Length: 407
Image (cartoon, rainbow, N blue to C red; front, top):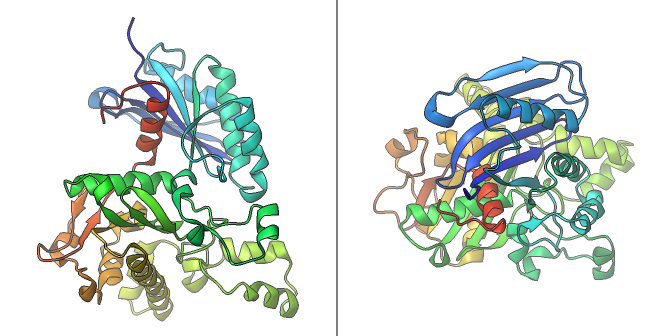
């Protein structure tokens, strides 16, 4: 009997399902796809089979009522390529779950008890955990015989010491309402910190890395010997770096000021800080490419937004250098981190005394793989490391399902 080696990775959002099917013999992708606008009349399914290298993207628009219908559509698309969910080669289904609280410190096989705990965490992740739960329950109904594995965004950060994870507020109040710094993007930080060590030809246990996950959402982490010791996001993904639409760090008294002086409600302030702040709040754009274009035309608002973004980024690099004591590498990842050379150059500029430098030529090059962009003389390596959260989820899922991970 053939040992199953395939893992389906599902990332269920409130109105979308992203998916990838991987073969864990070599961690190759067999298919990728997206179902979006779930619940609307114009729902869209986009699917690309990758097996054999002859990728032909298929798209269709049709009403998809709910996540159950969305996963049925995923199963149909995979079946058209001979990769159906009924295949005996499917070993497990891995699910991205945003918030695991303090209980879930590693990937976990889903049980009713696990589902109940994820549901109890909804108040601290109201936008994400309900959709993640829906995806898991729907997948369970489709393949009740398969291990369903939850991989938590927060898990990698549970190794932070109390000094880093506690807020300086009344302990009883904090504990009663689960208020502490959890961090997010943990699957990406885990993957990139390990891949950076591999790029350096060293064991992750020997390497200290500052990981900068810069997308529309952005976060930094300090990773010492493979363990996270500090990260920039906190109770929610709002804390930390300047992001596409989020403010990042802000004096909490701003909230009270807006309530008293502007008469804004809690919901209005929440919308302001999460959806109308960051780069879009500063200059009207959250696309770094467009901001660079505007800077080239002499737009002062775009220039200021870029400078504020980089200033915050540089502060975190310095702070995490102090937390780690010794830094072997700084790794840029995600959409902005992987593609915006000016951001990387500006973030490191002036930090030569810390051993950091960027080679202009290397920084300007584009590559799909991990690469160094620091000159040979630099004491600290600066790297661009494409993140691969789906592959990391598949790796952890397969290992927990009893498979031997070779990639």
